[in-house]
Length: 532
Image (cartoon, rainbow, N blue to C red; front, side, top):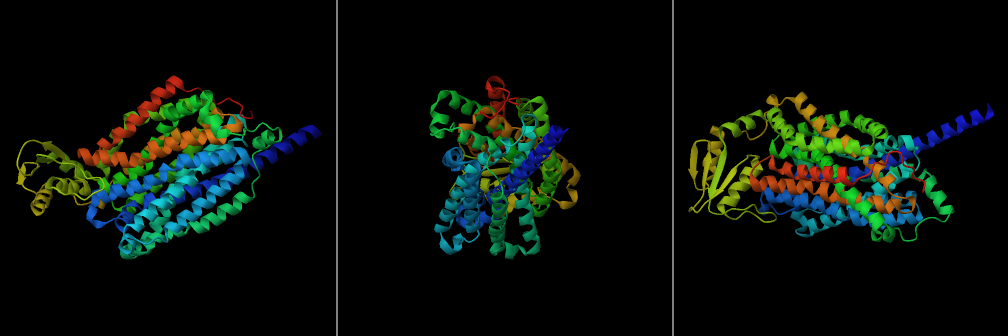
């Protein structure tokens, strides 16, 4: 009886410690994701503030997305730097350092001068701070996921780490809520003048709270056991990437799992938000609310997906998510157009737009010069799909339905669009809010299926002595490069083709790649022990 009571008491202590570990790790990670994502949430506001107005709206937005991408570039390098530290000096001390770097760099963005004040220095400083954010985030995720997994039991490891997986969505949701609150509180002029700084400066408060909570946590027991036994690697980066047995696992997990997971995460949340606001011209506040509701409803699904992967396997759940992405993305985004801006859908069907010119391109980081380039910039900015015909003709012509307009006279173009009933923005009275939320929820539910198992899966692939270093690199290349740059490449594809749905072929292709590589090369890991 005494032994049974002691065992029960020990179990309660272990469960209590695990809850504390999950809470402390998740809180800090959610705040770090908030810091990283608040820039993307404010992308449409910050672009005109930090780049020259002469670029044009399309090029300015692409430059803003590229600046967001700058934070993604250094994430793998941060994983190398902090992953090595985590395997040498411990998980806790390392992610305390990454959190400090993230908090300081985020708050600093809120203090930057704009392009109107500092000229080219403003975007240079912004890109620099975004790079520091990426460096910090590169070390955060691997530490938090490894830390929680090494405290959890084998049969519930994915459920425990799914709390960490929730944090990215929580960080995104928190950024939406904070930005929406201050946009509602302030006038449009006030927010665009100085109010946009507040979401960044709030990072100081979040940093203080998370630093205090994490300071109360203890080091990973598995790491401490390996440290006492003298079994830690003295060169974890070299062992991870220069020994083929480990490098092979890193590469297969990158292309067969993490790339697809990252692409699904960004498509289902960020790209959906940009599609609503930039393409369908849904009011930004309303779009934030709709996607915020969908995110909130889907958050418990991370835990459900974690439990499913504990029972049926990590690989099966992730592969299912890839299949769903391949076959549902285009139908879902077309349905978003139908329910969020039915007037646009009708105008596209009844009065398609065609541009005819002898040559034309989409300027990426420069202002449109030719009449055709200016016309395409206008249509892309207005969210109007169009087809480009390149034939040996002199001059430019535009066809809107049955109306032909020679030259690039913008007033005639606008009049023809009005006659064809192309909406300048989505009519709020025509938006089917329940259906839009349902479609967004389906997108985010697929994110849950893909993202919830990945932390446990990566932890189970690698031994303790090199785990932090090994899981961080494929994660940040997969989610950062393949996933994060999806916003840029998909926008570039859609603006280059004039087809508002063509940007979805990029995430579909990456999901298909991960499905094939995953089925052929990835092992199942759900029953593996990790204390080796």
